[in-house]
Image (cartoon, rainbow, N blue to C red; front, side, top):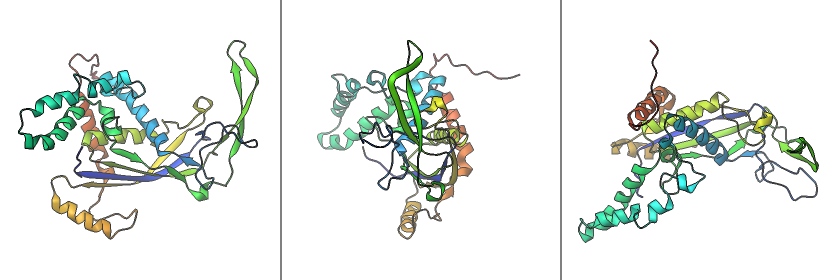
Amino acid sequence: MFHTFKNRLEITGVLTIITALRISAGRSSEPIGSDLPVIKDALNRPLIPGSSFKGAMRSRLESFLRGIDSSFAANPAIEAEWSITNERMNGENGLKKEVEKELEQYLQEERAAKKDQLLTDKIINETDLISLLFGSPWIASKFQVRDLTVVPDTWFGQYQERDGVAIDRDTETASDKKLYDFQVVPAGTQFEFRAVVENAEDWELGLLMIGLHQFETEQIPLGGGRSRGLGVVRLEINKMYWLDVNNNPEKLLTYLQELVNSNLGDKLPSYQDGKESKQKWTQSLITYLTENLPKNSSTTTHTQS
């Protein structure tokens, strides 16, 4: 699929660990050390994969959208419940076959240029709303989250070790020889947060604002042990740099010139403060969802008299 640069939102902030965090690297095979160590970078410092943050946000937003209408968010874990299954894409009556038939109405020399656009339009038309922002097997994600690296001054160089035990469900007592220990990142540790979303529609930015707000208000835990109270985090957004150059080539050329002469994190003259558009984007989401509710949806709107 061919992409045209239209807009970009850069988000930076700090993620603070409110209760101890456990994002496991899997069971260790080392003879000495924790049975379940946390994920670390090459310098043995704690690390939060961007995929963990993004996955937790996607899961929460999926639950919200399904609460409005199940068609708004497909189940990414089960292929049969994807908005576009492999069979729908590549089968005998799939999207690719439909495109081949539609191409027959074009001249031979026009078909190569039309093929990609026709398939792209069909994929977007049948993709559920959450996948349009977060991606699917057939469409790239617009939202990118970097791995969150530790703020050095907030980590004292050690991990906490905690004990665990497997419970026998029949006797409701500790299983024999099932003691284990696991590492956690201490509460108070902070991580640098950086994310980018490109070519997003206003309603998609509104969906993103709701997801980020859930992290700002400690509503989305991360990692394992959440039933024990682990993984409570709080996001503080410092900067939201917004650039919209859609249908404005001169503005894009100016931005590219500024970009070459800037350093990472600089606020370029072309940038706007994205925080000022949060309410507009959120309202755009509400309007979009309302207008796209299926006619047979059981969702009803209640107003107070």
